[in-house]
Image (cartoon, rainbow, N blue to C red; front, side, top):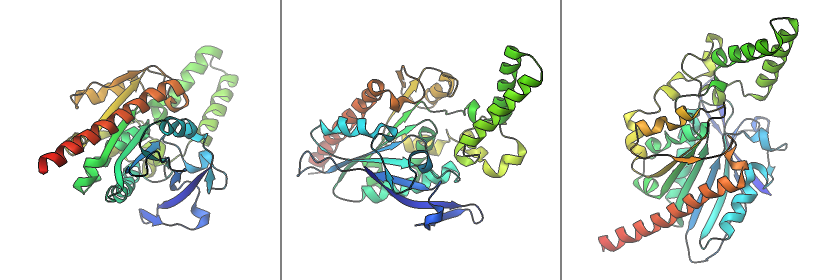
Length: 319
């Protein structure tokens, strides 16, 4: 069983973080779920594996205090790294449902720096799925300490670098309407089904920044602008972000188009970073596909080992 650490809650009124919020604010908060550490060698330093699936604390926990290993398939991650030879600390990052994603990125970067400054930390490996892959693209630019850049590895999976239709009501809703009308006809029944589907979709959506910020430009209605940061997707490939992300180890994985994040949006990164993304064959929830996700964890472990060799080389060179 994992233990949830509620770190902060975004304050709409003052546009800042309430750190260590009161219990009534635990829902929809910025949280880190921590699991039992894997110690394979008492003398080795710790490798942090932070899984960021783009979900919220209320998606996985009813009491906001504990979270099962099976959530986000952390059980599979724990099992995978228990078979390796080093020490690991497996953590699950849960987004604030109301904060602009850029603010999630800033706060998570602060947390990464907190981990990095410890001499007992070997590496920090952040795996971002979907919107959290987009969030990852900003994180290196918020790392102020050189040691943080040296120790951090980023892995982006099925990321909507140019936005996604599902976060864009002005684009998505007409497509739903068109599909239903084509199947049933333009009548009261189709209008009823359309309304029911949209109401259901909005009931499971955050109806806030964590979903709207990854919209396709011009995909958000004006009445939602206060819950939308149009600069997030528009500036994702800023020179500052690109220069910063190239200063650390990063890998990009793109899956087949599934209606949530089109392949074209995922491959957009290749226009800006001289590194071809790795193709994976899976539905959008890659983490639930054990075989596919383990191939990604293979790359994570390989990157940790390569980082270890690089650090040893630099240490010998300095001596």
